[in-house]
Amino acid sequence: MDMVDPSGRSVAASKALAKRPASLTGVVVGLLDNSKPNARALLDGVGQALRERFGAREIRLWDKPGSSRAAATEVLDDIAAACDVALTASAD
Image (cartoon, rainbow, N blue to C red; front, side):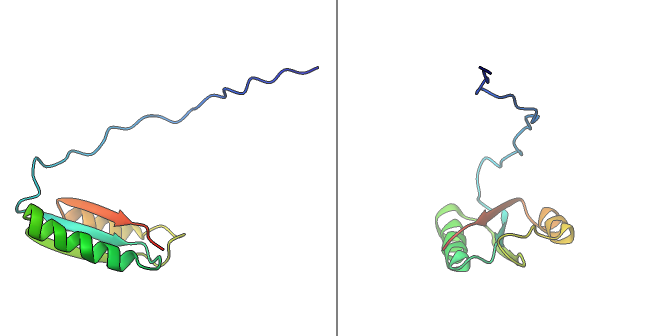
């Protein structure tokens, strides 16, 4: 009989979280629409709440070509250059 250890081992390296602002007041927030149904509606509502309730200065929106495809490097670079924080959403 062969015995198998079910615990496995992970080789993934841990990464530090990105720095977060103390407040969203006055920041530019980037929103990345993953192109799933209703993702835009979800992000529009989140963007509005971030402006009204948390004082975000500006909400900028980008699109991905599809939910199963990664955003282009140029899009990610543009978001990083233009925004203080960024969010993406998944909806159906």
